[in-house]
Length: 284
Image (cartoon, rainbow, N blue to C red):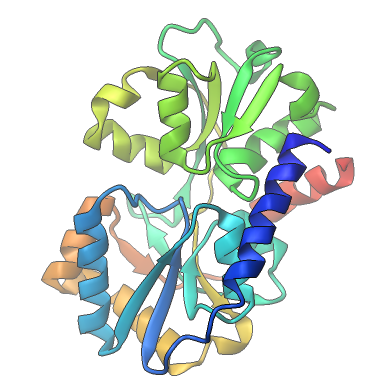
């Protein structure tokens, strides 16, 4: 069994145990957060909790898990009202999910995947990383896995044969740290996270260098079950996200995240991710 498949099976086993928990209490807004979220800042989480509680009038529970798969499974099982997920799991479950809101970064609901290497590494493009060690974020991450996996598939390659070794760090911040520390020669990372960290933790990011930027793709969305789109809690969340720039605590959260706000979006925003996913599926 490949290490990637073993990792996914282990994560699924942990998820099944989580689903056995009692149902969430009524009157609570339960929102899942994946590693796409910059969760190293406890003050940020506190402010987000406080803002959502004030804006919705509901008790708020923020649910964090280590992997995208765990949060997606909880969402699909109805254990969460909504979750800030990635575009990749969204297109994988497009028939069952709906977009609640999409963040706006620098005025657009778009972002890129960055291919990074150590600051002193000689590589200039993906082809130069053949035979190296590579850090991915998560098997269900668009920017942290799918984009690079797609580029390799388009060239008739696979990660397990192109790279000498690859591994998952389960967090974009961890990819940057792995490359900076020399644990990997290259890495696939969310460009938004890299840019935010360049300002917040410049000493870490300074040890890396971007050698390629992907096309623009739909920013990781806040999603809910399609059948729950009109549920009172989900509607309250959508309205609260839309009003964040108008509230002092909401503005503080957006400033920390370096986002302009949240906006409504159509599923077509993620069509480019769906096309890459289809190419990768055809190779497996």
